[in-house]
Image (cartoon, rainbow, N blue to C red; front, side, top):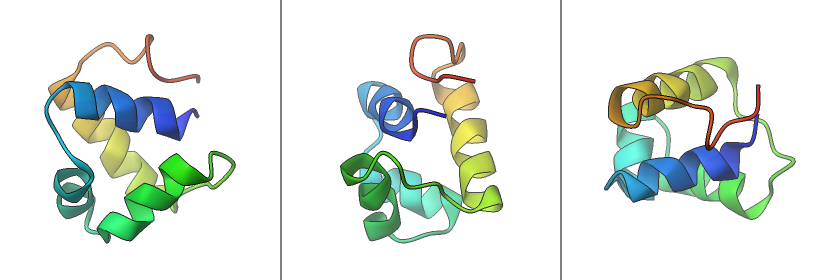
Length: 67
């Protein structure tokens, strides 16, 4: 999964890192780490919540996520 691209898609949809972190139940630093270190993988629940948020706010994951 291309987490930095997914987070960028959420940013374009109007969410900032704090919004994403709050929804996912993690710190803003955890979200920032995914942007700064693309090889970092989130825990399962964190990643699942980000994908859920993306699907709710952006819809089609094709432009920003690599499955």
